Image 1 (cartoon, rainbow, N blue to C red):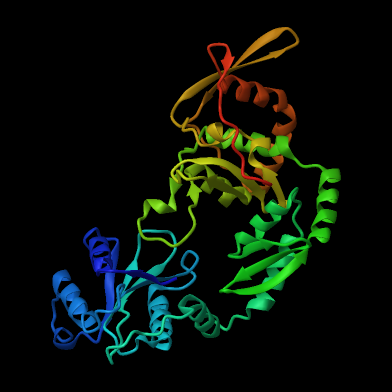
Image 2 (image 1 turned 180 degrees about the vertical axis):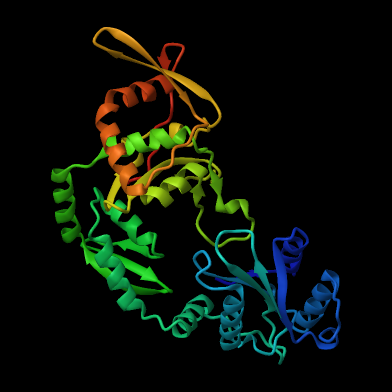
Length: 379
């Protein structure tokens, strides 16, 4: 999604990443007498762009700064560069000075594009519905049919067990859709256009079926408790990286491990203070079930860091007190299918024990901690 600015600090941002070894300038064109030089400084690039843009002082925000990214490494940086060039040319920037940087500072391959909104003729490049047009060109390049893609995503989401309309919206949001609720329908938008809808009455029927079928909370809790002793729950945000147009997303070593091994997805919600989430939703993609996070594990317990510590837990059984000492540095590796079966057994055995641990973590000086109960409406 293009981003505008009043100065060419976009060059500063990308060159800083180059200096840190996290990016590289892979393409630049239409820079006049600078084009054939073997070395060009950051200041020279900025000065050229400023002088070029200064031909039209009526444009308050002459900077064009955009990103082109893919999931993980599905496309190479070279492929993303070619796609970015193709799209910017079709948007009207073909003859403008342009710079493309490849970035290596996230798990998703991506490139940054820097140019000027002043055209070669001195007039402003048409930026009406720029984002929508860019997505239209991208779909054509990748041979994607958005409406057919929507039907596939919708049918897949409807196979999950969910308890609210908001939880269903979340399943669609994971695939890049924005939802709008009307009296009778949920409308879904992507690429700047409505792609389809679902009747609320159909979702209500699914919710009733889910309420009757029940879920495997104890099994999942046992797995989370096991691995939180071995992997840190400390959260990191994608907004730790300054330039991103993505919504705020949080992850930890623990949530990443659980996603890779068991298909567990943790979606965290944050308010005005985007550095601190106030709640989460849990999705089991293997069993295709959606849970309200607080039904599984309190947020503070999930995001705490208990790695490299030893804890002694007490459980009572038949009037005797047993002490269980866990060395949290010891990690056992299992084949996923065998491991999942053993965790199912743990879910039944440790039900009371897990509740006792959770209660102990939330008691201080004999009194429960006072916490504001903030939840995302409808989740």
